[in-house]
Image 1 (cartoon, rainbow, N blue to C red):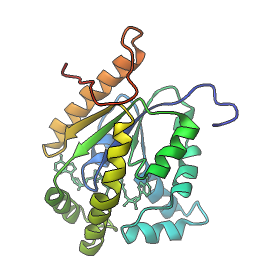
Image 2 (cartoon, helix red, strand yellow):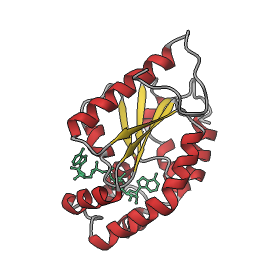
Image 3 (cartoon, rainbow, N blue to C red):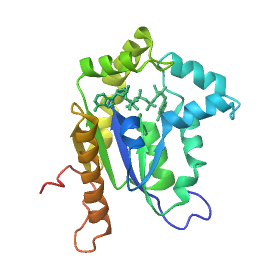
Length: 208
Ligand code: B4P
């Protein structure tokens, strides 16, 4: 916990596999602050602002995750966490240790939103995106890592939080509209004094 932190930040985790559209969605207009750990890392690498920048670049190119402690240290320095606005945290946590470190520092998130997409569609999107880490063999490694390691951890994180699944296998406009609806609902519930926030389970629905 920061020494002089006055309040816990109000955060929604945006989860989903590689290519599920996290960054694309969060680039569209949202009523909250967007923090993407992938973008944060790409910025650190391109501006060489960290002693381990070239190591991070290699990990990302190879389809591996940046070590948990480095990721958490980068996040803790982010100014967004000093704000009382809603924060959409995209791409974090990707492991249980990241979740534990986050909780110790910032408490529980308000909710988790998980973008769900079949593996075959993830592959197609990444191949056509053509980013530096989108080489076919790297994509396979990232998808294997996601389905074998990240997804099981994500399921455990979701089980400990209020969580919502969004079908990401639709047009960006439809997925975006769905995300906005969920964010508005989460904001409403979080600020309402009459609705108690349940700390585990998945039983809230914006359609209820
Ligand atoms: P990220 O930047 O998070 O990238 P991503 O998971 O590959 O994809 P994203 O879901 O953002 O896909 P996009 O919107 O671009 O991570 C990059 C790397 O950073 C990781 O591999 C890792 O090495 C490192 N990293 C990040 N966070 C970390 C953490 N917490 N711990 C350790 N390491 C971490 O969409 C992909 C493509 O699909 C685009 O071309 C887009 O146009 C298309 N698309 C999106 N939505 C669509 C839709 N609805 N319909 C059709 N196409 C769509």
